Amino acid sequence: MKIIIPIYAYGKAGGFRVLSQLANHFIKDGHKVVFLSHKSSDIPYYPTKAEVLYYDNNGSLSSTNQMEYNTPVLGIFSLRRILKNVLDNITCDIILANHSLTAQPVAKCINSAKKFYYIQAYEPDFFNPLTLKNRVLQYVSKRSYGLGLNMIVNSKMYFDFKEIKAEKYVPPGLDLNIFREIKNKKSEKLVIGTIGRKEKHKGTGYIIEAFKNLKNKYNLDIELNVAFGTKDLENIEGIITSQPDGDENLANFYNSLDVYICAQTIQLDAIHYPILESMACKVPVITTGYYPSSNSNAFLIPIEDVNAIEEMILSFLEYSKEDIIKKTEIAYQDIKQFDWTNVSRQMLSYFEN
Image (cartoon, rainbow, N blue to C red; front, side, top):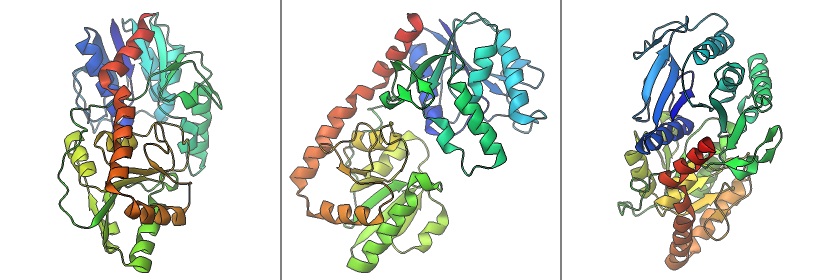
């Protein structure tokens, strides 16, 4: 099969890693994959063996990008029209939309290929604050779920979630050869880690407040490593930031921790990459939820609760090494289902039927 994956611009978000890895495994199974991106896009951050074609404002295709190339007047609305025209004139078997803004061009194009929509999150929740632009984007994203595309969700929680009505499920995958246990912990301190994000719903702020309280109230010998955190966070005593570049360095980050904390506050039954990656590295996880976290494989906390984070860290210090290892071993068994070969072939089975 020839599979087309249209996007507008490459980025570093986890969803792009999913697309690159799916493409790599589709190719491994003998299929041809082509990414379509606007000419102003960067090259893929996550390596892919797929062909990458860039379309300009006239809809012409080339194999080279030009980051200084101007995006068209009216921005995303013009880009959607251009992408539709490109899709009208390309020969393929499958078109895989993967974002609300690519769904409409895929649905409206006259291409006879099978059309799928891979939903990696309920996007309307992320357009905050509700500026005029974000209200428009929120409206567009809600509408994308009713365009009649064959929807595949990355978490079973989205089977019947607000505007989403789906029956097909393909989770994000994981490279268990990269994300694995490596004994490289050197510090005698309790080293806590999280992925740093500014958005309130990501929960980084709650973790930082809990960390400061633990340092001040209990004088604990602890350190907080905020991966991808801004440098100004290091003005807080005990916090260090890091910028792990690539999956191997990210795996090293997890392996340097005693415990990973995720305090995100929305769509709690969804799949969250740092949870999977920590579990693959057999690092214990404190989390507000996120599949496949449970009381048997993680330490669960309520959302938006600084005190709960403090108390769970204090409780974690009281757990025996054997109890912690038991949880991490259960977690490791629970994430084996996310091996990329299994995940990509599940997607292909939908394409082929």
